[in-house]
Image (tube, rainbow, N blue to C red; front, side, top):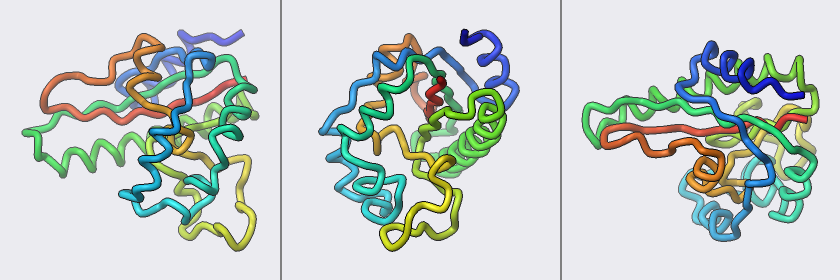
Length: 179
């Protein structure tokens, strides 16, 4: 049995602003989201195992998600000085990634088959082996929600979590699928 109250406390202790239960049945994978990855604005498309096409087709990603029923959504929300406050955006992103990696390490102790899905692609290795060799850490690597084809706003809404916190805010969202 998943103790969501305990998971929320643990997530907040690791620095997240918001933590909410995730019902994996609500997760819809959308070809339109995956198509955004092909635009390669993050410069990771086709360059790592955690991004398309390395992370698998939408059908393969759906098979992975179908192995889980429960999870949590975690967010880090930053307050911006103005809408162009890039420095705070980057600081909030860095904090989110730090919190994500710390919580991932803790959750693996309780949920060894957990699937972390982040706000951004895996950064476990300085240089990814894609496509020349298999992933060095296939059980620890993680893809982004978008790489899986998830529309983050839809996942949040379907699981009763806010995504937009008003003007001059930025929210980074990730999830952990738990067995």
